[in-house]
Length: 310
Length: 310
Image (spheres, chains in turn blue, purple):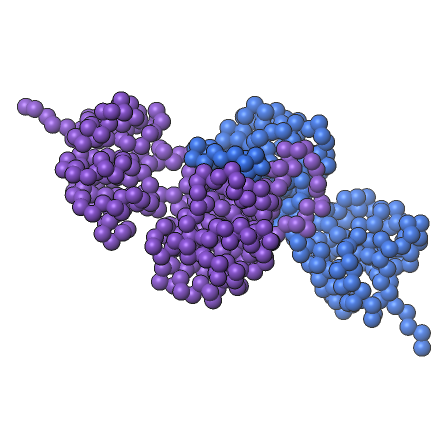
């Protein structure tokens, strides 16, 4: 009897503990190929013999691929796979996986700006005690009017985390975003938690940003493309808004010459918000659970339809 | 007809907007004396002609004072007035006034340490992009086991603020503090929000601190005297706990030579936690409301009995 084992290609460069977990969990039933451990020139050819893949391989590896049955992306975002017009494999992403983590960085950033954790950290580096005179420069999050753009996992989780703060929180989604201008002039904290789509690119334009009041805090934990960054920088420089917490920017890494680096009313979280110590281990667990569904023919979690775009 | 106006002495050095608010609100009925505006040598004599005072005057001004009817302290703490053995005026404090603000700094500090806002602020100062490699060093607050020491306004408010984080939160008060050793080995975040009393001084001794696990975060928003600071520094240096957020320390300002300044697993918030931009204005409002009760003979809010000690 000859046994054919399906091949699983791990494209994402995981660290040793996760690679071991993949191998231990899968080797009995599958042939596990760790892309990172192959010579570069062999990777595409090996990939093209695999039925299953975890990770975000180059777009052209997927062209004319007749073997692949299922691609589990290592991201929520679908870029650049929206460009696939003709594909025959199942496609799943990590939608919702980063909600808690991103929402916690959003809260950490807001409270950080209001309670001046960034300033206090810099004072500490300089061994400088300021003490009581700091107090009048602090603000309270409680009872703020919060406007969240995006009703995905991140937006919903931020609303959850705010539940103890007696805030007045509104979420606008793609259907209600037309009300944006009604809310902005009265918003204390504007949080963009939007995916990148045709509708969201450039959404927060000059006209909308101008409606923010001088005490408004802007938070972006979605995509940098949602905002007119040049104009955002201008209103931050002129103190026309209170400040900004930016996990994302138009260009990442943020170029050295960006004025955002030196602005005291800006906190840059360097697109770290989706991460936490157990992130990689939990990705493996997520994949193994989805693989069990694949094996039993159940519908996969986070199935994506590229024609619909989500 | 001769009108006698009661005299109100404002001891606390308020800024101009609050002084104006006092004068506007009180001048029709009272003679308002702004201590800070008097020559130093006249202050005590003027004080001793007053029926009402806002602020924390020197203890000896209160000795043999037959005129004072009511002293509204500008603090929650009663130090040094516990030393008054014989006094005939009403005494009120600001109990509860700082709860929301202190609780917000506690949350800002915890989330700051878990999402590395302090580290990100320092990277920003150096215009250094780290990005994705930061992710594995971040932690989630959600689902943590939180132990709060102190069931005053601060402790209760911290529990409120945590309500969206699915934490397992326990509060120990002076009656249940005997259970401390049962909880400590299983605590992710230990928050001291204790007043300074005979029972709390030195409470967190070596024996208790040793019970904390390596991933534990310690937060002190009460009084520095509650902790064996030398031992705390030792376990922080040896990474026997994850870190500390310290709003209070044994000595304040923290001496330049303290090792705490340079520790990356420590965040110093410089006893700023009780403050916010509207703090002074709200103190005036609090006093005016209590004054209305004083005028109508109602019981004052935050009446303190120094014999009982609270």
